[in-house]
Length: 274
Image 1 (cartoon, rainbow, N blue to C red):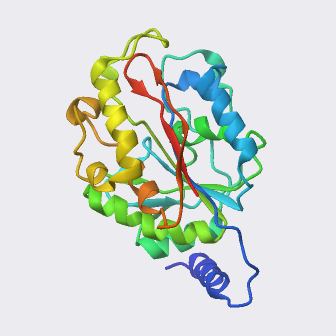
Image 2 (image 1 turned 60 degrees about the vertical axis):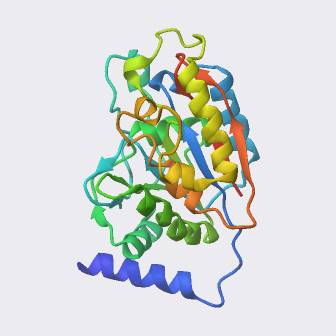
């Protein structure tokens, strides 16, 4: 353990445990379906809903994002003073590559999270587009520190859900937790038309999912949803849902803040806890 990391960890632990610290508002947990990178620059019902949501949310001290676009073998936490904006998509209009999200990093909370989760420290990962494509709408002033926790593809779904208990503690420290993925994500079965008619399988999956997040989290954890293998040929866009649900306290309400489809099969459902 290097000296800088040790001192930062000691400071973070002391602040977290101090009995004299001022009460901090518990922050929300959000799951945001991010869809196509074109949502970064398009004005549509989905992007307008994110802008309105951002205006309603109390400003957090910092933001932790779990993005489908940082999937790793083993957990990693980004500890970067000034995270770069990663344009990790290809073949889109030049205007998308000119956009930067210039928020600061979050050092104390990220070191504390690495300690709590035994995750490895990553000093190079900036903000991938699963993170900043959401933030440009929710918090367009770039004035809230941001850090990321990777999606560990080696862990079972139950582990991701239990991770939410740790993230729930961070919410008590004024940290907003955001999962960014998609409720359905099969890029081989999308329509090029953003406003295409919704596929029957996608609608059935989304309807069952909407009920399960309110009434039966075990269905989410066990992938007990219709057409699951077709809706998620790979899991990186689904797994960010689980720690968000796992962070819910018994007395907290879950609210759908947007529902709708793009390209016929992409459910853009978003929900808020707390």
